[in-house]
Length: 336
Image (cartoon, rainbow, N blue to C red):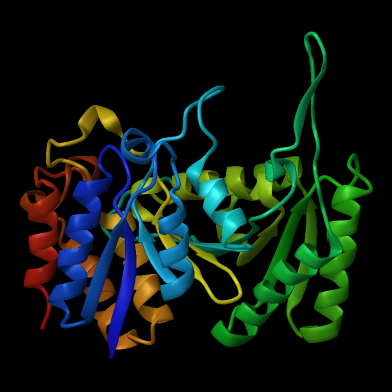
């Protein structure tokens, strides 16, 4: 099958890790046409916007994109490109698989969980106001439609992938109406479409404690936007960090696959960034495109590379000496 994929190289190390990922995907024999599109800090200089209209138009047309990391200023400056993309494309479902990788040493074993994060509302709705000098409010938006939609996605995923349990993290003891609505919606969808799936609810602070005590007790996590953002990164830390986990954002007919780490401008252009997270996201993208065999080929290659642990094939963050391109070359050599 031939595929047209929109490519956002991003900022900082983005161009390096996306180009390495392109090479790995092409080396499987996948027939891909890449459309390179601007977004992020680099796009401002040329287009005056972080997310130009033609970038949005192309992704809507071709339905799939691979995105490198983009810069988001803290406390000022332009709005997050990631948040803009999710809203403009209605990418309501963020999925992040998190699992131990042989050869990547961590404090925890037997971690194999999947995070489902509602991606379009909550505190990230961006509705902030300074109502008086020194007083700012931020509005948390929760709707029945969005809550039921993400719940349905999580339970259907369990049925399709043989997952056994969904755990909701919430703060409905304090945010009784907003998180209360979210819980009510999830409970109803659970009973309606997947009563055979084990279901539990944990208050977010207790859930974090349970997570660092024994993450192996969790299977599929279901969270609203803000909590999902935080817990996603926490879980990445359980298995080695943001450099070893993929991420995907799904809408009704559009999907954007991305590196979940930052743009790391301090090491940009030095050929030392680890491209694995984006390569893993590329594997999710290939599965989405119906290229399961090629996706498996890449996954088997990086599993083997990590398990063997040769320093000359691993990037510095993984304890090796390889550069970005050398890491990609080592993966490609393992393709049969």
